[in-house]
Amino acid sequence: MFKPLKIGEVEVGFPVVLASLAGYSDLAYRLICRSLSAPYCTTEAMLDRQFLMESRLLHRLVRLDDGDHPVAGQIMGSEPAVMAQAAAVLSRSGFDVIDLNFACPVRKVLARKRGGYLMAHPDRVLDIVKAVLEAVPDRPVTLKLRRAFQEKDTSSQAFWKIAHGAFKAGIAAICVHARSVEQKYRGPADWAFLARVKREFPDRTVIGSGDVHTAADALRMIEQTGVDGVMAARGAIGNPWIFRQAREIAAGREPRAPGIDEQRELISLHFRTACDLYGPGRGLRIMRNFGIYYARQHPHPARARMAVIKVRSETDWRDWLETFYGQPDS
Ligand SMILES: Cc1cc2nc3c(=O)[nH]c(=O)nc-3n(C[C@H](O)[C@H](O)[C@H](O)COP(=O)(O)O)c2cc1C
Image (tube, rainbow, N blue to C red):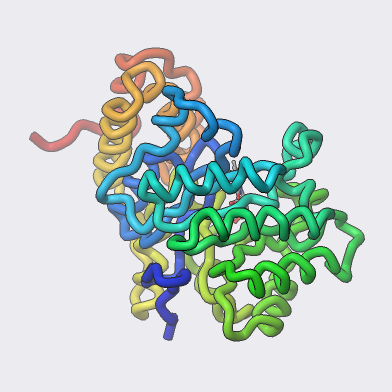
């Protein structure tokens, strides 16, 4: 019933994938989502300028794992030539898809004329798209867009100009976050807009984003709007089971909620993966943040959440895990 997703020549398969999430869709969490059958993941937005110089940060950003494919590397910037250079580095580093961010609503990003700012500047977007397509002829290029820049802009003229121009130029897919840039993350996402986009581009690949809180929401988005794929974003933070559950529902089964033992094993695996990749200090900070979201799956979410916020050391972390998730069977 659910068509496999394909992005250019890249076979994704099951059409529910991990969205780009600053602070969350890092390599460690992508691997965790893969362990629960996420078929495709996107990095967080990376600034194009970071790709101009060799640095430790750059090495961390482009670090990949054999178990993390197909994967999209997302870049954000405002200069066509710099975006093209960044795309070439991502391609050489082994990213399967190059994703361009024209959606980020953060004030500092808009002030620097990047991300969502460009939803109001379609000609600039198309210049960037053309430069990137020339720089990475062998990789599918995708765009992350918003419905419009301004909330009151119901005609979304700039959106249509960007989408038509970019598909004509040769991009492989668009991912549409069905909110305006002004809306940031507030209020409902406009799924009717996603349906319009798919009607306008019946033979192109359109991925939807916005208000996918559960696995059932993800499949409902496909059914209601006709999009080819769905990005799980906030609904996937601390809930990697969403990917398994989406497959279970699609197969006509009841989605399984993870029991406490499964939660403990997965959180422990995430902790080990993050510490191995980033070192114990950074790993712990990342996990404390994720713990706040993992706590939502716990039978006592508020208590588990309050306790993880107080974690300051690896010993505190182990105490938290043992108190709320018990000890593993030896
Ligand atoms: C904490 C957070 C970080 C995000 N970072 C990015 C990002 O780096 N790049 C991007 O394209 N979208 C980013 N997004 C947007 C999501 O990918 C997604 O489009 C949006 O959250 C809408 O989906 P939702 O309503 O189901 O959460 C971010 C969203 C959140 C909540």
